Amino acid sequence: MAILSFLLVLLTLIISLINFFTIRRPLNDQIVEERVNVLLPARNEAAHIEECLQSLSVQKYLTDYRVIVINDASTDETLRICSQFAESDSRIAIVDSPALRENWLGKVSALHSGYEQSDCEYLVTIDADVRLQPTAIACAINQLKDAELDFISPYPRQIAVTFTERLIQPLLHWSWMSTVVLRLAEKFPTRSTGIANGQFFVVRKAALDSIDGFTSVAQKILDDIELARSLIRDGARGIVVEGSHLARTRMYQSFAEIRQGYGKSLHKAFGGIFGALFATVVIFLVGIYPIYLALQGYLIGILTYLLSVFTRQLSALRARSNPLYAFLHPLSSILLIYLLLFSWLMRGRIQWKGRTV
Image 1 (cartoon, rainbow, N blue to C red):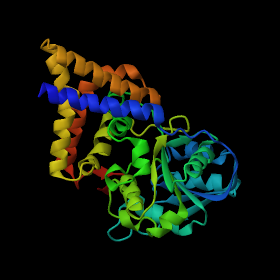
Image 2 (image 1 turned 30 degrees about the vertical axis):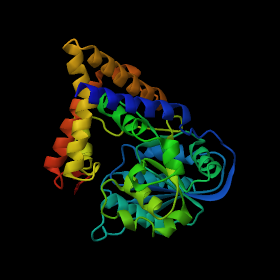
Image 3 (image 1 turned 120 degrees about the horizontal axis):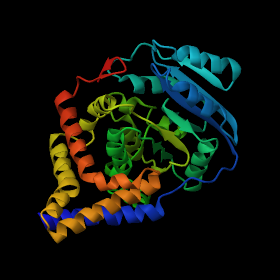
């Protein structure tokens, strides 16, 4: 088993090194002449949406640009804050999402309502807790055009403040950087290598029209990944790109929020119970078993552990997170397995923004 652990870690290291040097990094901030619409779904986002709208209102190098805020039955001050922005900026429009569509999840239903109001060549979706740099959208669209892709997902910098955030949030970036050769997945797209993050997602509207907007992910908790897979299945090409220099977000403020956030979706990340069990074994072999061997004094354990740390550090350097937390990868792995188990035990019973998911 020690040899298997070493080989798995070595494989993740090789993939991480390839991606570290080849991942696309959008930097072209030329003027975008085409029409651009941004979809911003918002349900009880009063604590976040003002800063998000502020960052959207100062976007540069977009000649024809509109932000569509979809108010998803908010009961806090979200609508008032959005209305103030809309009154002072004609590019910002507010759409009230109708009653939740039957057999649709809330966020996806809101996104589809915004999609139905859109009129553009390029469509951008963004979460309310994301903050964009002034050239973020222009750089992302130019990257999509330069690479002749149909969609891209610039991965935002994940801000982590508390200890548990710093343990778990860097795994999001590491999970795809160490398992998928991005340039290969871009050239030969398959559903299994479809990666996306709905926090910041850019798509040609024609490609989205071809799959009837968000209807294919109406009931998908991992709507971003499933949308990428639907687009790929329809013949579109796209991939995740490095976006830590373009956008940032703090997804969760506490361990309670982390548990609820991962609890609602993590059980869907691996395709089913057998996929989850397989993932648990791999997480154990890559993240926990090496330090166990190292503490027993086995040289192969020490080597495997250090290689796993280096793999995490490569991801951290690209994601602009603290590379020192890579040394706590065994703790991160234990926490991830706990969250996966919690997600399976609580599936269909998690309360998120006042709805059961």
